[in-house]
Image (tube, rainbow, N blue to C red; front, side, top):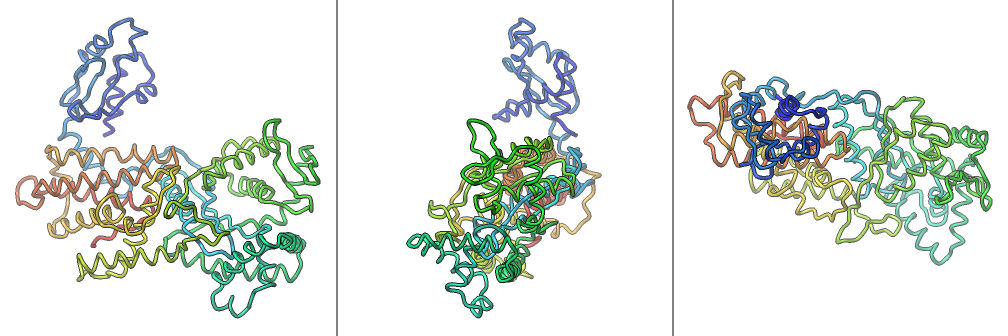
Length: 558
């Protein structure tokens, strides 16, 4: 049962407010002794011209419901205390019946295009790419759970001036044998060297732009090198995506739109939106906003041209109800500009485009940069995380079957969980040893809690049923309240595109379950054993599903 909705219905029977308004006003008291839900009666004081405390008393006088132990007026609030046995039994039954479908909702429908990850070709994936990848992946899972159909698009950075620079660097310092032996690191080395040398020889930048113009014009040598760089890069990316258990529905990168941009440019011209500015072609937006450049003075395109083309292509082919761009904070102004150009073109669906920004990962307080060579490679972080997980497994449970697989699931899951437990907009400093700890607010802590629940069920060795669910102790109530909150937590995470809401929920549930484990003799043979096992199984179901929504594995043994 949705106990909050029950509160809304009870209040609605006594006051003249829309249910949606009442729902938005319902609070959770910080002190559990004050109840589980509270309605602020003072909101009615001006309308009724009465003392808020008197209003609260009047409301309570006409309320009664078997699902609540107490409904009382406390000052200007109407406080509701849920009957423990009712919440526990009803919640456990719902979780055990629905299993991993618990929490499923129909909050929307239709395709949601999610532009995510989008690494640049010829550069190794760094920790800077982790956020877009795992945030986008988690949002896709959350949206699926509430009724949408996500389409995950890896909009590869496989076009642009940087490829002219890379071709220039390869022709100056490149070696085919080195690239064949270690493609990504060799190409990355050339790219970094280009920028180092260009600081002393700025004319190198002109060479890079010239080679990109050749690439856009279909120059055979430029195209051959570009295809090679792209192929070896994708092989490396897919190896890392496999580790993260992330898949995509499309790898259409910037280059895919190269032969489709002319249509967009023509459309802008036909609608008299293109004007010349210092030799470049731009769209004026407003007196107080920078114009959107569409073509450079040399006639080459930029990422705006390709993003406009991609937006139209995605609307036409996917008919999306939403289009999400999981890209860093620093691009917020750019996406506002992109939407404004689309609106000027007459595309009202531009309002369905949402930038999903996120903060930076830093190390030692410093921003990571591939251009400067100050980069932490994602693959190396994942390898080190797995190694740290294995060390802890060897210490805690050296006889664990499949410990290599578990170490992979725990180590990589720890990195993903740590990213997602942070509010999306926050920047955070990354310390791997803190991330892979089995204690504290970490992914391994949640995984270990779930493995503990699974261990209890194995030891009990009996079928868990929904026949006997009579529990009322405070430890079980705390766990069951969390379980009952899961659908609302999920709805909020989907509304705000915020995976951290799920991660924080999982940590809270894990803590409450561990307190239950520490204070209750779960496997004692008595008339409440079946109910306690039902609580353990329901907890494992919801923890496993929470981890799944974050893209984190849930090993049954650790």
